[in-house]
Length: 120
Image (cartoon, rainbow, N blue to C red; front, side, top):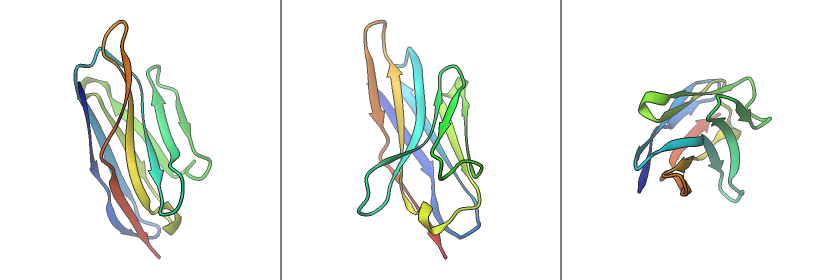
């Protein structure tokens, strides 16, 4: 089994910054990808940013130039630095990890979610 635990988030004024972190632990052979999704009230969950095992990244168009995803491979941790936050960034942010647990088993895990609220 694998645990995915997020930290960070909170309340910030528009134009401010926040950081999120997500650590995976447990039966990890390797990590294919780790990233962040968000879900605002009444909306579908959407991709924010993801980093793949080779180091490549993908961002939602709405956060490009403002958010940066990074990782610490030794700690199986991924970070999301969010700058120039806007009220439309308000959502519950979820960490997602695609974990290879063995040669024949790969599973997808979600964190519990952390609230990010941006006031205008």
